Image (cartoon, rainbow, N blue to C red):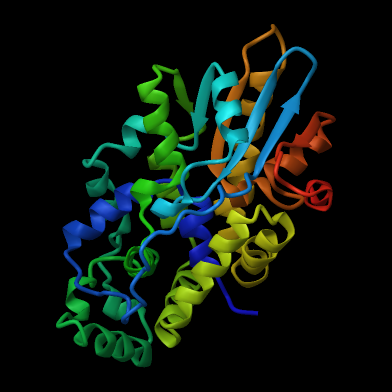
Length: 329
């Protein structure tokens, strides 16, 4: 099985990608993801099958929507099920506050977090053979490792993968969460957040250095495979295929980078759970739409599984899904 660790993090787990994109521009890297195929002209498609669940406690409901943080123009319009959940909800809750996601100043925070607190450089932390390979790849675009030397491998990897995705027509500005933030603002619908971008930065920065280096090595060893891997994950998300998406994402991270998976996914899910329970319990409240990276909803340690374990009624909402798809989770 191909390893997809940083792709999982990029498109399904960390919402602050717009800020990463701004940060990458500040680094001014010309690294163009070794000649990914040019994205074709968008052709009208059926809306993606939504990764949408309704959690009820008798007097109100929370809709949980699995986002893909990088999307294309032809991923819109959305499913009518999402439109209905949005209309029914009095509030929309995201991973991070919309005002932070849309603030270009956040890019500087990413750059600071991506730096080394102990004075080391990327050239020093990478093995010699890996450093030389990275320099050769960068030289094809007229760049050198010096442009990245001040940044940790997790940020370098995200930068390169954003370059891949953008060449394929994906953009964080078209991500599902960004789209719904703009829609909520236009509708004057209140918004809230489960955490801050600073929290996400702490998680990324705390990931073990050996796992950061291993993820970057995967990219450098077989950069051309990244395009197919991103297409696989995107296809599984569009098809609303819970089992396949969990196999491509959570299973990979659990197996290959367990500490990063625990910090990026499990611990954040555990921190969000009481907040989501608070939207359901106690005095009757209005309905709420919660939009998080799709990986956070999948598997036994996903938010859906945790809520079921607490005794809540959880049902998949997908009017265009087959009965087999609905019974998958």
